[in-house]
Image (cartoon, rainbow over all chains, first blue to last red; front, side, top):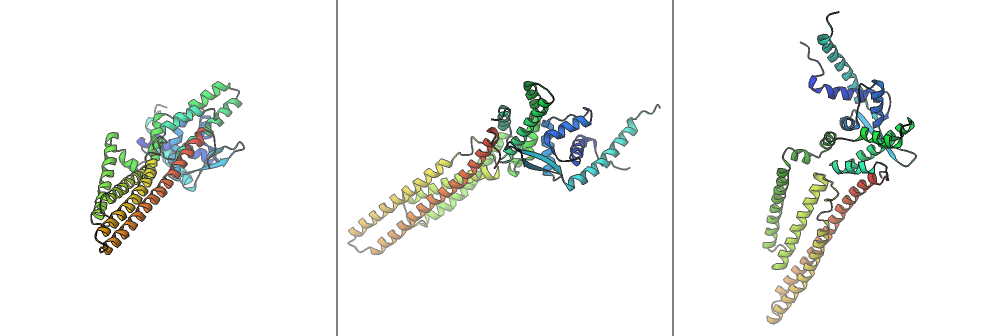
Length: 115
Length: 248
């Protein structure tokens, strides 16, 4: 029997990481922009408070999947933005495959069989 | 000052991570708060409501703080966190005592075999100062660089005492020098000027002793300077966020 790449216990972690990497794959973003864009693109289904977002971003940065860079803004402030790395893009591709497989298997069980 | 200073101060108190990482996390938060606030204002939301919405969106709960702390723990903290807090303290104290015991044994052997070239209370006082300086140095080194506990209220603990010990070392060295020479001269006079070799030996020991005491004072100053620079850097990083000054 084929083992799925994603397990139920790690599903939330895998989903969070995949969502963030997918947003960053579209372009560099500040932390709060990631949260706003996720909410907008998912029609409110995925809502991230920064309380959840920051630890995930830090973990991804530590694992080398994203890079945090500082930029100078006109008012003399420094702002941090994130960009994905080559390793992150590769990881996202794997996550896409793994999550696709997982949800196909899930829907094959819980899907409506009466129609 | 940042309009969200109160929230950042509260976060700063809860976020037990080493500097400069802590100030970077808080600066990132501060920037996101401001930008989110500006986004809501541009959408036509009232100022107070925009501030409240920004705070609700950005505020980091206890679980997230714990995750951030665990992610950025030093190896020592990660090891210590396996134990309850009172046990952690005991582990640190016992480890420090073991190291100090080893240092004391070495110093005792040096002092008791006359390796300090001068016997008597002054040698023992200098040995005591050396031990105390070792203790403080090990303790500060552990806290600032190994455990990386950068709690601002505790980082300067023990540093002024290092300078005091350095000055005490000079005082003891100079006093010991003159007193030993004085007593050797008196002995030589009573011996009718016959015990010249004893006098020379005492002079040698006394000069070495005073040089050692100055060396100890200089070392204490250098170590104090290095630790003070580190604590200043930590304090500057703490202020950078709370007073809106950018990172250097």
